[in-house]
Image (cartoon, rainbow, N blue to C red; front, side, top):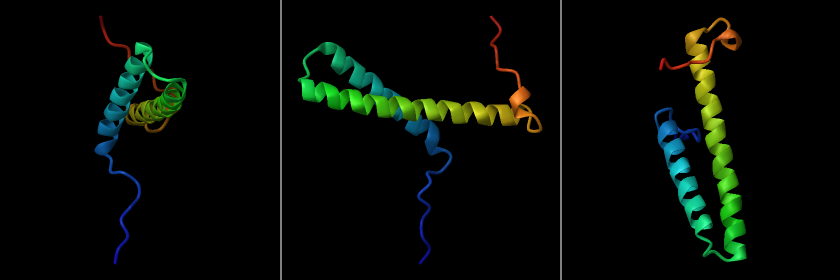
Length: 85
């Protein structure tokens, strides 16, 4: 029997990022409400830090992919995208 890969498929990454960001926003709103106990606030803060780190890592991976697409030979010299105003 073949083992399934534990690495998520490529198309789920943006969904996972969006879900994490949404959960983080909900956590912040609950914490700002001030109705949580100290223990609940600490647990929410800990979860929020984990979500923040996950989102940051996903953004860094996306930036690396964009740089590789823009200049596969020299990704470090690729210019950041600046939208025209």
